[in-house]
Length: 178
Image: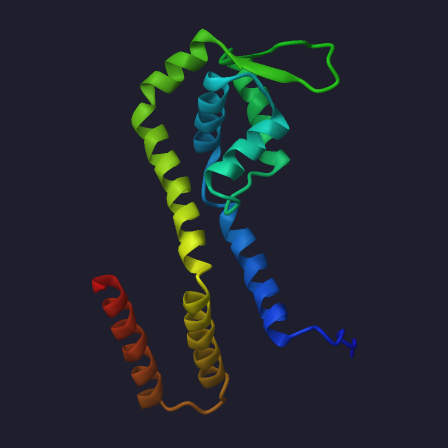
């Protein structure tokens, strides 16, 4: 077994596992159409490179969602093929893109969708801020620990499972009503 450094705490390992799961979840937050609309939106404000578009999306969600280059660059190519954007200098080492008239039309036609996408990413930023309040983090960790500890027991009776499920439903309802 690998020896952990003296400063290593079991909580760090659990947090790393949860962060990895969140990253997987984050990748599914937006589909290709959403990404393209966001890119057009940012390009309507100023010309940008692919990396700058990634950072713009990341900033909007305060780091909770960051599209991968594997999502951004193929969509830039698609938008270019659709004549929605154009490359400013094809000879440059890093391509900068700007919006064309077709891109402006797409944005205009999809204004409501774009607003919903921006609100979704902005709400993720609020979620991150509220979830990082120490008392909230501690309460979430306590619930997870209790739940994992209890559910890891081999012979849990059906009555106990029903009690756990009922307690989770009750907690969820209280949180929703708060």
